[in-house]
Amino acid sequence: MGALKFVSMAEKTGMTESLHSQNFTIFCPINKALERIVKEDDKQLGNKIVVKFDRHRVKKKKMLHNLLMEHMVPGFYKIDDFRDGQTIDAEKPNSKIRINMYYTPEKIVTANCVPILAGDHFARNGIIHVVQKILPIPTRTVADIIAGDVQFSVLKRMLSRAGLVQALRNPNKTFTVFAPTDSAFSHPFLESESNTNERCTVSVMKHHIIDHMICSSAIPRFAKSLNMIGELLSLSRDEYNKLYVDDVQIVVKDLVGTNGVVHIIDGVLSTRQAKSASAVLEEYGLNEFLKLLEVANLKNFYDSLENVTFFIPSNEAIRAVPAGLLESLMSNINSLFSVLLYHVADGTTQIKTPEQIFYSKLENTSIRAQVHSSNSSVIVVIYSTRSTLTSDRG
Image (cartoon, rainbow, N blue to C red; front, side, top):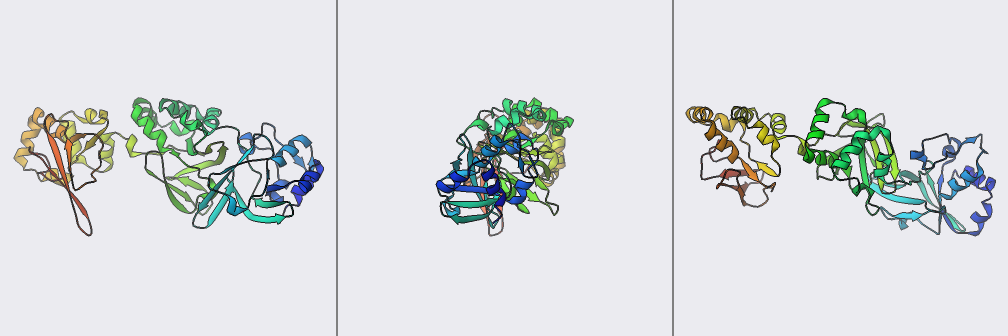
């Protein structure tokens, strides 16, 4: 089973009698993990003082005793008794072990993000689960992990502006935070985008947060998970065992908190919700509409709008407008302004019903959207009582 080193260390710390007389469930690190205990950062070990062994000689008996107790749970817990997200009190006071279960598609069970390699080894007075390495024992929330690290000064400021710090301290929820370092924000575009628009800041930050716990061992070759703004994040593992989220590399994994886990990434994840309207138009190649916005001097106005829905004609639709009509509009800025404003509706309602009415930003006008579906596609037709760039179709 590979628990000889655990037993040896228990003997050296005077814990043998307790192990024989009381009932315990033990999360036992493999021998190799105990043989290779080296000085690690307290974020991974979860201890303020680091335990070090030299050829199995215990230099700090008390700390070793505490370390073993952090892997022992009073009572009997079989693998089938565990529930995803369950927290169990360890024998050491104020130490908890969080169980997570994943299907990738094979079942993976973790204890504080450490995989259980072999479970349900039954003894007379307990159960032993063999784990891959020493369990980190968290003492801080994910918000406090970020707050306590100097490389996250920009991230801390942005989380504060987005009003998310207290949410990430909630002990009754769990989170996965993909945390960019300060160097990831050094690109001028990222700095200006994140610091000038509060709505964008909220979107950017929520884009980096998943409201459940994803340990690195649960990331398969490829998977997707919804973040806090309902967008899918791609999680992947390459042939060299490197981990990525949306093609941004995870450089430090599994900083376990009391309410989740932090993974450090070397870039900022991009979200469409944080992009300006003109940036999205440019991304999708809607250059004809962009030209009209520039002629009407409405580009900055479009970018400043919040809580709206845009109805953007395709390049082909604009080119199909009679040349005389288009030239007339471009020579009359007031008329062009009205037409472009008409293509903006209040609210961010999605088209979900066969027919919906949207109230345009242009005073006293509305847009009626109808959905026509077939076996292979859905066509949305836009009707209005005034002339549009889409010839009544968008």
